[in-house]
Image 1 (spheres, rainbow, N blue to C red):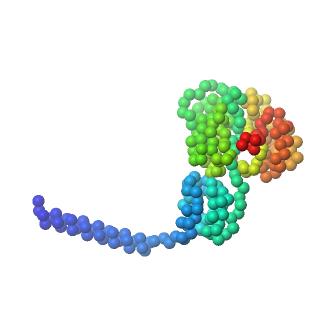
Image 2 (image 1 turned 90 degrees about the vertical axis):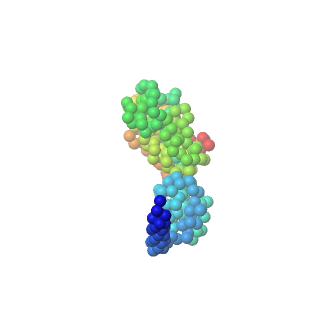
Image 3 (image 1 turned 135 degrees about the horizontal axis):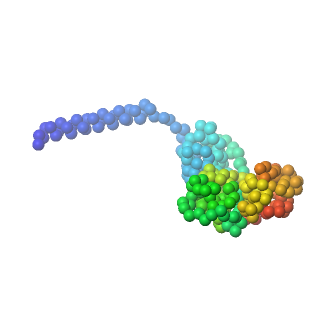
Length: 269
């Protein structure tokens, strides 16, 4: 072995490494992006769940957006008012108090309420049922499929399938919206935590058809709308809906509903 050749190779490799290191160091200085020191403070104040419920890619993305003025200090749905106040103090602004939101599943058809077209055996993922006959074994094409895809994406263990239908634990829910986006039937929405009544059905079939498919289905009779003193209930496409901004939580709609399709959310806590 030629010792001089080996030594020369080592020197050359070392010199190249040194030059690359120097260039990288210079590049880091020249192209350094200055960040607002408040960004780190805001990031530390955020809960660190990185759930994406704020609409930004993780807590770091939200922190950067808040400092740039592209997001509100109270935009984190997980942190709530407490985190909003901390970030507001960092940013020197008053945190606007946002009403707490919670996920709601517009279906309460348990196994005994529904009619099955066939027995399904296969992949238990709600998103996959769009590829099977009739969109799944249940006669109602608007109801919860019951395979818990929403459960699998919830980072807070706030939703579970109970007797064939997804049920939200309102106190655990942080309104991150992951269950909302993953439900292929679009049954889940975010509503104010203070809402007491909501229509737990999405069946848009006419009353006689809906009743054959599900015992718990809204039949679109409009009795709830006619009796609501606040005008908060409307019926569209044969299914009732309650406007939480107009609802006075009087409970008349639930009392008058012949199919008991309206849930008292507060009583479930």
